[in-house]
Length: 214
Image 1 (cartoon, rainbow, N blue to C red):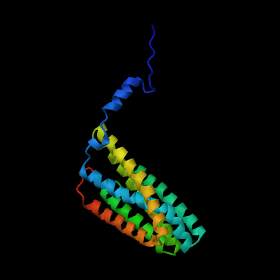
Image 2: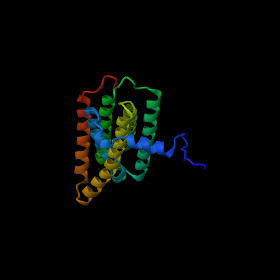
Image 3: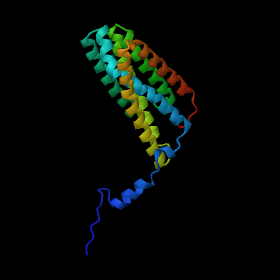
Image 4: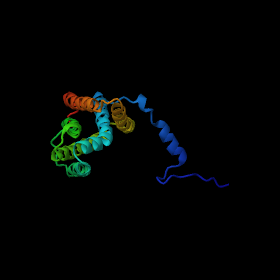
């Protein structure tokens, strides 16, 4: 009698894959280094900022400038992301540690929010959008690279899951913050507070002790 065994494209049977998945401990049982967890904290507030910018950016820029100014600002942010990716691939800023990159990313994205909120000079808005997106992209790529080299498979798995959770929670939470604060007529105050916290988190991560290879 013939027995049919379902084989995955990787060459492993279904039972082998299930057993391998069962070997991976729950992420709550995996302890990551303190500096990694602090890094997640900084990314949570950066994600909040991204969420706020996604909703508040068009509102603020169009209100203080024009729809054309916002169109250029959006293009500058997209260009900044592309530039950040290119810089990372080319290894142009290898001399900077991830802590330094995250400090710059936090400062730049905080400045971007404040420029969108208060500045009526289009050029300044465009420049802040470019550098905010570029530095967040560079720091994010370096962070993901670090996550792939922090230890065993279970540590990498925990890193990926928690990192995804940070952004999955942070971005919509930022949108919610702006929406609620707008209803309460306190959007400017909310954006300013979040910008101050993000900048503070950048300073904080810069003081945290990390491995020498970073």
